[in-house]
Amino acid sequence: MLLLETIRTCNRRIENIHWHNERFNKTRKELFGEAEKIDLKKIIKIPADLPRSVHKCRILFNAEIQKIEFIPYQIKKIKSIELIIDDNIEYPFKYADRSALLNLKNKSLADEIIIVKNGLLTDTSYANLVFYDGEKWLTPATPLLPGTMRAKLIAQGKIREENIKPTDLRFFKKLKLINAMLGFGNSPEIEIGKIKN
Image (tube, rainbow, N blue to C red; front, top):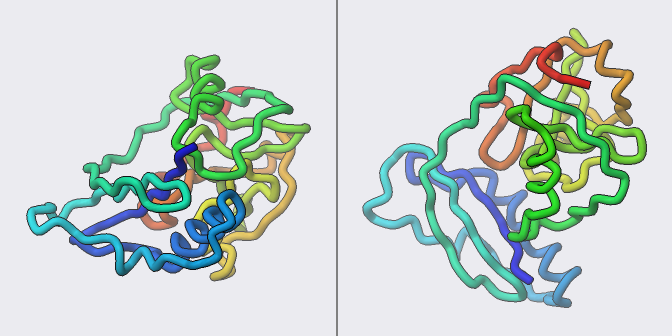
């Protein structure tokens, strides 16, 4: 069983390392009983020839780190989103095997999906969600995988958790997708009207 930690690097600098260390070591402890923490900042070595553009630092691990690689990153363009219901899906850890999520995504012809579980919005196939109601940004309190960017934005008070039902979408004006690669500043705003029920 392999897991994944994805970290954004820009200008050859590692971003949000505190939040990645937290999740990485929590996962190792919960799944493998590894109490001794690893500091990713000391382990990750930026290649000398890595360009200054945005890269995804991809760490594959179980109890120990198995592989670290750097992949050029481009933001995915989202023109359409569809709600997909699955009350049984589980993705509590960032597993390298994402087949359950991809199988749901393949049920839709839209660019992306929002997974509805037990009547509540959770995540897309690869990111957490934040919705804007004209005054504040809210994130579903029931994500499949609580992400590192989500944790950071909650801690900073920029977003707030709330249970969000599909019928609540009419109260929002727009949304953003957030994950390790997509923060508040670089995640494009998507109009609520692009969501197909």
